[in-house]
Image 1 (tube, rainbow, N blue to C red):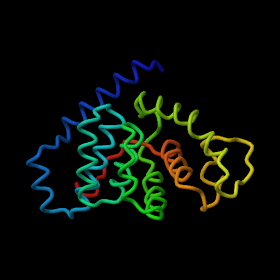
Image 2: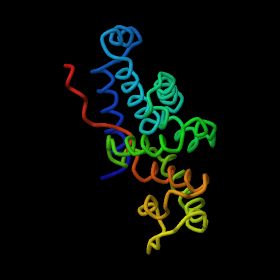
Image 3: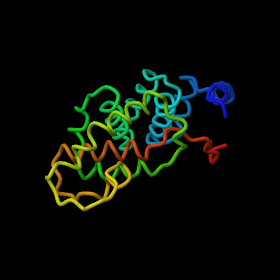
Image 4: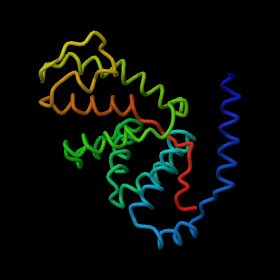
Length: 195
């Protein structure tokens, strides 16, 4: 497969998708009267993740993710904090989330499996490679917790390499590494339960 052919197919699919199911502000407001607030937040977060991570429309995507986070949706708060830290180096949102919550919600977000890593933008892949080569080695060198010996010092085993007594820096390196390893940005299957 040629990469340009894949990108052209993605653009055509995206345009078709937006034409078939256009979402206008008036439709959002009328739909929100019939759906619970968390369902609207979930829809905004998923759409924001698609626009930010797959279509490279970062401003619009981040605004949708932030709107869902401001509505109190836990998965959106986690995704927004990760997005801010990874793309903008802004870690202030992490301080607002307790460590136990990050661990629990992070597993939910990463286990959603909405698509395949093929759909990540080039910028995401570049930041992932830079992070893996820069910060992951310092995670394995830090002696803050009991280390389990592993043959491969990579993202694959990072979640089971140290026990829970690790320092804050190692905890966040582990969380961001797991986000890079497991997070998939889009769903190719539309929810048909409300058709």
